[in-house]
Length: 222
Image (cartoon, rainbow, N blue to C red; front, side, top):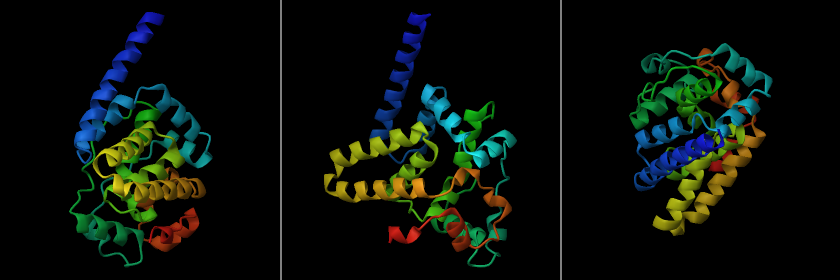
């Protein structure tokens, strides 16, 4: 039994390391990110992160419910008031040419796979609500925010990989990245759990109201 477990850990480590190398070469390749996330899914760290999330009543209820919203209609959301989350989200999607359904789908089989899918579904909503941009520094800042909010191991790998990549490729940017990571992590600690929110049922709510209720000060990013 011990030998089988050691072989499994060795195989998982090699697979994860391979994905990390690919991601280091092409850090913006979403397929590599999804591959890494899928490979991390069955690790002990993933199980522990979900167990920790379930200690938060609102998040636990959402996980039990398996809440998954339909794809939003961007054109409809653009008709919402300009101060609303719906309008802000739709404008963001339009501006960057994104597709709300771009994320890799998966079958929800357990709590871990549910959290993974819901995190993918709401990633861009988190960008809008927190105010983190979609450039490299912004993505890693949001990952630091996510790390403090969810303890997901993908966030650990991406923040660590981002630091390593900057050290090798653009060391002059390191101070800015460290600041963004620190800000993101601190914001996440102070904010109420974003994973617990049913954003799609309240698109009409003003973005500022969402931020106030959740304890998010996006002005710190400016």
